[in-house]
Image 1 (cartoon, rainbow, N blue to C red):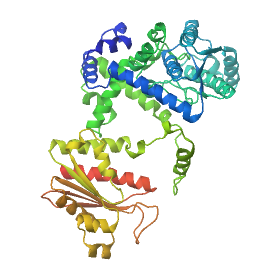
Image 2 (cartoon, helix red, strand yellow; image 1 turned 90 degrees about the vertical axis):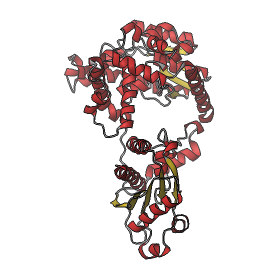
Image 3 (cartoon, rainbow, N blue to C red; image 1 turned 60 degrees about the horizontal axis):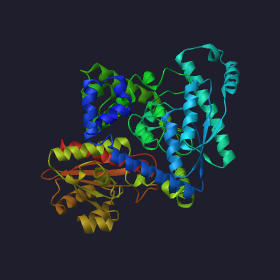
Image 4 (cartoon, helix red, strand yellow; image 1 turned 120 degrees about the vertical axis):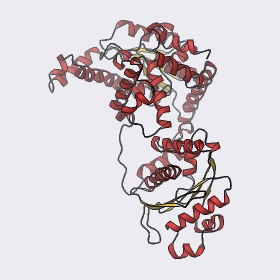
Length: 500
């Protein structure tokens, strides 16, 4: 808790005024639980980010990064981390009808951090582009309505990015993105205008971690003390546009994630009450504006939205080539081995919580899901007290030898049968003496039909000790990974229903 005052100071919240009671209580809780990391941990985070940037430079064979130095703290921290990792960093001040003080801060940061600095005023090019587009829509050139200001702001951001990519090509380098985690959620970035090739600070909180890093890595104080603005002429500043401070934004996002973890079925309109914010007007307003901005900007965080081939995993093939042959090791993404979609992860947490509440343990017996159901439960905090173990019985022989499924049943009905699922659950519960609930899965994951059974046919059995098994027949569409995801989602749902 000793860094609570530092959080309030560096986030500029102290200067803005005290937090309302709900926010003050939530912040204290989140500091205590480590969501706002203490300084000693942030020091480790900074060193690891630098280490990853060193690895990228060595492994990718790219050592020059260009970025726009807007005069804000995010670009300065990005540049500082790259510089510490021994990149050549070229900082560009690219004002477009910009407040001179912001440009001056950008120049000052370049000099303070020892960057190569280049300056190009793009105001004339911007005015020419707006005038040209004004031939299609005359309102663009004259209207002060917010949608028109936003469009003009996006033109500014994309014009700067055109310039940065040209210069990256010139130097044989890459473009560094400067957006942070809080801006990522709030949507304070322009598609194809702020998104570069490498994003060193995108996982960091705007309220606390970014200014802490700035102070730690010698960014000029007047840069990290300055109020955050978009620099695009859209509004009076980020926090004015949000309707909350960045500290309040980060507190609400953490609170919403925790609420959804506890109850994945919560709807957006129920969250204020679920969070206990309805009696604090400032908190109730903030929850509403955070959810509104997240709803308005979700599409940017998944851009481009790609439609997969209905019969083949084409993108997985390219992923394999890139990962095995070309991608730097520091960027190889093994998260798919241990992570699940938000919906499935929340449902897994819900089942884990339900088991913990009843002081019960789960054992799984899995065929087509190959242990992924157990892995989903294992990923939930507190899983060690509720997951007894898992039998991965992929082949018929394993179902017979490890789980006691009757060989005659499999020979007569194939493994894709409700009674096979029932006997898998029974065998798992008999052998796992410490378990109270068994969930068994057998099905045709694809991509082809098997033994006369169609792709997507899955049987799921759930058996609570001392009760009869419940077996559900399911039919899922799509590619194998979609069938497996649907199976895990349904198995979690059935497990919860059996407990209830």
